View 1 (cartoon, rainbow, N blue to C red):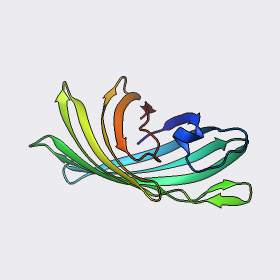
View 2 (cartoon, rainbow, N blue to C red):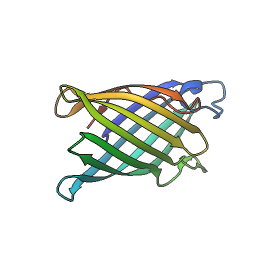
View 3 (cartoon, one colour):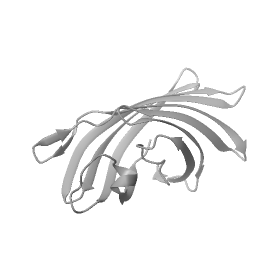
View 4 (cartoon, one colour):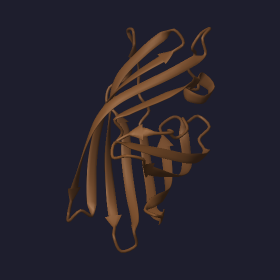
Length: 168
C-alpha cells in the first residue's frame, strides 16, 4: 500500500471530462496509511488503506478521503501471486459546496518473479464510468522504504497512467 503519491499534468492526461476553465493544469497529491496482515500460514494477505486526496483543477481545490481493500494469494509452488483490490471507497471529493463521487476501481492481477526476484506483473483494471485497461509492469525495491514502479498500459484512454514511483 502506498504512503504518498503525486500525479501532475494537463487535464487531457490526468482528469478528462472536467472543465478547468482558463487554466487546463491539474495536479493531485495523496497521503495515506496502510495496514496488511498475513492469514492462513502466510499464503493469504489482506490489506486496507486510507488516504487523503487533494486535487487542484484549474483555480479550484478538491479534497476527499478514500479507502482500498486488497487480497493477495501467494502460491509458493508455482511462484505466481494473485491479487484483487477494490479501490476508492469512501467520501466524495468536495469543491466548495459541490461534491464529486470518486469512481470505484477494481484491479485483478498476477505476478511472478522473473529475474533476481524482480516480478513481472499483469493487471486488469476497471474504473467505473471511465473504462478498463490491461497493465504490464514491474517494481523493484530500491531501499526498504522506497520502491520504483514501471509499467505500460493498453486501453483505457480515460484512465490515468500507472504511477512512476511510490513510498511503501
